[in-house]
Length: 313
Image 1: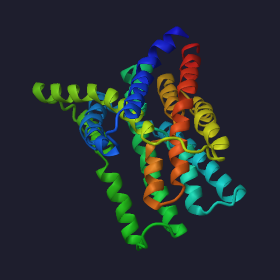
Image 2: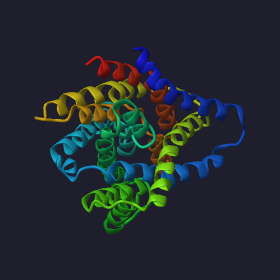
Image 3: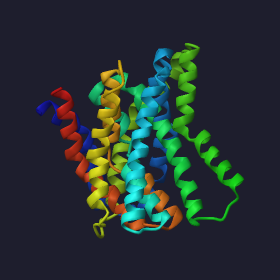
């Protein structure tokens, strides 16, 4: 257990430092703009490229594994969506945000540093590819259901599809993943100077992302605890990783490291992007913000417990 604490404490410690910094300073959310730009566009894409460009091409062909993982995540979305829509009589727009809160984990900021620290560089491939596939799913599901509900701008089907495709093909993590896989396929190696830049930026990605997470949580104070937390938090932090483990473990010859990496991604708290989507469509905003803060706080216990169980076999 001490080894697990030693593993997660530095990572969650950076989040706590970010939270404290956000509480004791008065810089405001605008001050995060350049840091978030650096993380999303400058630091994390080189990390994804660096992990994938040196991976044997054969490892990218495990389609059953990746689509099973995404299928489990979609199942969690559907579960929370239907609870909100059918049992709680919420509208389609609110139900969509609640579904995202139960399925869309912080796999971009928290996923790579935790998985690499816990399971080593071999966890990089499942982390990167699951991220791309799950984000593609979320990019399709969220605007489609919002358009169906009548929320947001009134756009034609063609414009809606065009917007979805644009978000997918221009996302910096997805671009970096495609470029990294292409480099692996052709066994391309960067010039030494360029490779050093990539590695320097990749090493900066994790601490900057974790610090930004803490500051973001501090700048969105918890005003009230939504009733939906009673079922969304258990689904996101407990049911999602347990079901992921059961499904992926049933795949013949599944790499244990890949299974654990996918389970870890499933256990991560609600992504900040869920609040961004809620804000974009002006629906369930305050509750979405609370879900991000609450699940992030609870995940310090649940993720530590998961890593302990993984280490104990």
